[in-house]
Image (cartoon, rainbow, N blue to C red):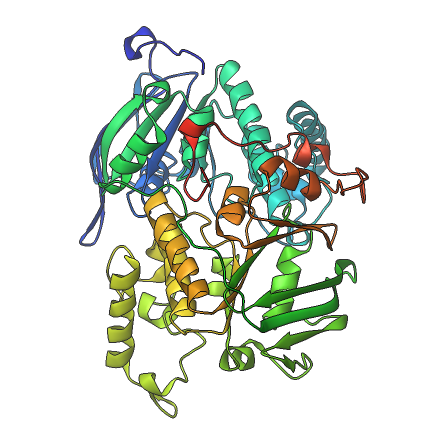
Length: 543
């Protein structure tokens, strides 16, 4: 950890004084005072709904504070919109990608910074600058690829490149590793440290305590819209940060007994799935999930896990192979997700915005999405609004969804609370088989503890759970068996006691014999993820 000195030794890059912001009756930020040193990496942590993203959105010009002042490089400034922030040298990488899906990588990066009325010169300049950035930071991505054809891990690279292209001196990253594997996250940390060493200032919003301990110089903890503590990272601990975030002691491991597997509930036989370009994404995969067990699938994003889960859920059609649910072979030419739900299949999609929620809907409407034909919510075509809202209020209390307002538009909840809305809807339907994609993406330490405990409870109740996560500590903590996918194939099976290093090699395509299925992307697998030191153990990790 680099010593950045005391606060008075250098003019701060950012100083926020008395910042407050309310959305109706909800106080998102309340009298916040924050100083960020120039040339440092400053972490901001807190539970979902603590106000982290709102605060940074004020700094980036998305929102206007109700009161308070902002200083940038010692000067009091007004930031009425994002262009003003960019002009002040502030860039932001958002938690949910701000990319135009049918544009290419190059078009997205130069969007808003074309550089000329006639685009030819601007395109040539942007292509050359992009090539330099890719080389300097090992963020290789095809500049002519269309965003919608890229896996989420590569889309994240584009977001980072877009901010770097604009030459920001102050870079805000909002949950930047939510779609990255540990090795990719380590690679990102190297980039952030290089930026810091060049004199740039980085503000890292995250709920992952591993990231805080690994890369930040200072850490501020937010709770209920206020900053409750700011310390040098080297002078605090994971346990202390977690307790200040939640206001109570947090169990930083998954407590579960050995599984007692029962009959096979989900069987996949020789499944092959192709994407819209007819490129095989799942190649002849077979697996089984039994009642009372959790089978985890590990792998770098884009190696077929998403296509596999979406096919089992009825969202995609397989090219070949068979899927059995509760001993019955499914005909995917006739079934859809609604029919599968009725047959006992639950699905928590990894992309909650595009597949799990309708963001303009109220929370209570999303709480029954896909289950609205249930007689408990009305008769025939007529829904009982009172019953729906009463149901939503129960789930809000059970899952600690914040703010506790079932009439609030779902778009106005934080990412982690949106995730809890989806989890509550699917888990409380008591499915025989539950598919879960990225269960704790964007979720805070307290909610992670709750979600992990609920998943284990479902396993112990005899449910069959197929889990996909890019978080290796989560895979290892929850899974009874671990399958690793690479290049669309299952390349290995391990138990939960296997090391992150061994899983990392399999994720890179290194099989038991030491050979590669295919040359891996060096920027994705250049670091074999190792076990973090005991003092930086993260939620869900085995001690």
